[in-house]
Image 1 (cartoon, protein in one colour):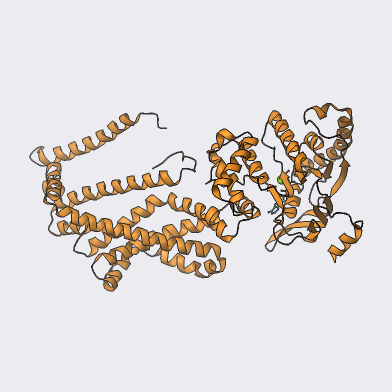
Image 2: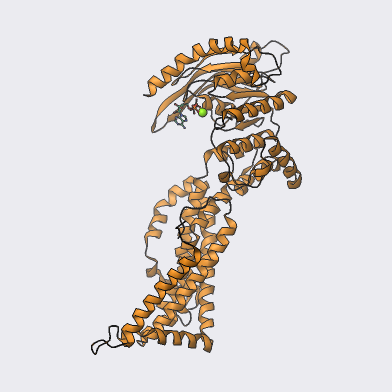
Length: 264
Length: 278
Ligand SMILES: Nc1ncnc2c1ncn2[C@@H]1O[C@H](COP(=O)(O)OP(=O)(O)OP(=O)(O)O)[C@@H](O)[C@H]1O
Ligand SMILES: [Mg+2]
């Protein structure tokens, strides 16, 4: 598709990482004219960060944080998706409901979710549920809009054909509306899973006692730049892992769709 | 009242027509949009086991008329009756092969055909068995597991044909079913359709823009005028003997006489429609 083989692509991607690490390493450990380009205090060094990551994993305490963040992400995604699917279907099939709630849905969606974080902490405490709630408010709207669109955008000819075939409402739902809504929902799966994670990490960052966001926040509190970078690297790897999982699920469920011309 | 009139007009004891459009007119728009009177009051009947072809310039209202017969569109005036019963809601006796793609993109060719039986409560295994046989009949055995987007336009049409015919509907509504096929395949499919039709003689309402195809297949060819307010301006009985071979019948001198007569009527309309559009 882009004209080079997989191995070559991978090699080039690795090269980018190597060059970035090298610049960082040289800038932070090799003095040029008596000063460091990237002072250790502000930028740490690749070696230190790697050592810290190693220590975190070797010590074993990282697993607790990772599992908490993962739990929050999964819960936020599931609850937000189920809510989005239910409301998406309801609104799409009942235009009056959609018309009445339209301004409120828009208002709620326009609200920056971060301002809700303190309220959720007030309501739900500092445990995982306030983070889950934050993630849900992000995931819900993405899924909701996509399911709504998916039900609305079913081709009228496909629908007429299915009706003439003798499908009742239940069969229409199962064979027409649901697959269409699902394909729209899955087209935004990467985004919604990403937002579930953002909700969890931002929630932890703003106030909690565990999770990756907490880890980063704690390191920042004591100007431990190495700790901050280590947390960020682990978070990034975590995101890549989840994204890979999502792609796997997506390829399995959407075999019927034409391959998109490009894929992020 | 309209229904009474229909019954009165028919000879006592005569079978009611499979499809009867009585003074049906159809308008689009209304509300915020300007009203477009697509079809002026039109009467068209298709008797049981009769094969009627509709030809007419593009945009005249052929699909519109078929949609009315399927119960997808409510006529602005007039009445639609199916086997003598006024039609309310969808026409459950009809199988409709749409002009546009109507397959479910999330189902394979086989699933798309089998679902037509499954909705009626047939067990999945049996439905699949019959669907396979139908795909073989339209020459698509090798494509059973493809999704619609992996099929060509003509192949999709053929899956659609199997999907409609497998339900064994009493009435067949077909909107340019062989539109995207090449001339050769058109003839093969035409012959196939005639063979299938010969076994149980469904009532067929067949839209095409190919006059030769219409004459080769149908018992009657109906010509529509160009819109707006399209009407039926010609109704020709095709007295070519059956069974017909779709390719060979074109060599028949009678075919040429009919073709010339119908084309002279149709040509004016096509020219008018083209002139109006440009
Ligand atoms: N939903 C609609 N709203 C408004 N106008 C419509 C609508 N559908 C069809 N029309 C108009 O009604 C007329 C008849 O349309 P129709 O689809 O029946 O034509 P057709 O004879 O099937 O043409 P073709 O041979 O190109 O398929 C056209 O002028 C078209 O623009
Ligand atoms: Mg048409």
